[in-house]
Length: 212
Image 1: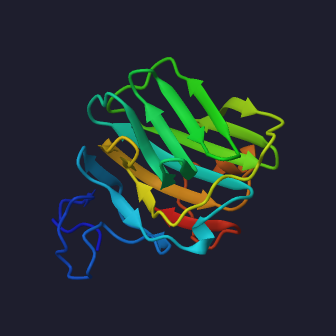
Image 2: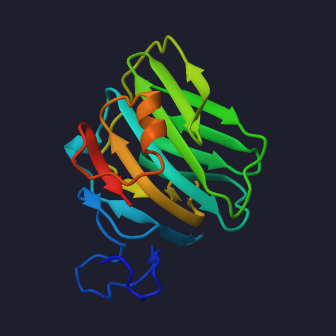
């Protein structure tokens, strides 16, 4: 189910009001649609591990987010893996105004310092690995590039895909997350810019997970 309490928002912490056996808003298995996810600082969305989500090659991750209140440490908006076995993750450090696309073992370690990360403002964040290059976009603009990545193969693990929660610091997002898209292809700049404000059909080439 999505909107258990009928308020028009998918509340990540709602109970299993629709008796589907899940206390999450819905399993992204792997196409879900409905509402933006609302996190109150104590919530998380967990999607069970599967082989398709263990991405070691080209990847694109897209996510819209906003903060409702200040969060004092690293928030992982979406990611897979924990500890040293971090397959991929999109992180925000609001006090340091930092966007981070991170993989462990090999792959991308790329960050950008923004002028500010304000509460009650939506941001669009994209991380891409294409071959031995990493790129990050914020609000459709290229803000960081990592060239000549020596080791392009990140660690993988059986950890679930998680939205809105950083298992390494036990910190949850406080705000909203929407339009989470995970691809096993490197999306082009024009594809990002032309589709960031549009919903997808769910049948696009390379789209592995889509939560809107």
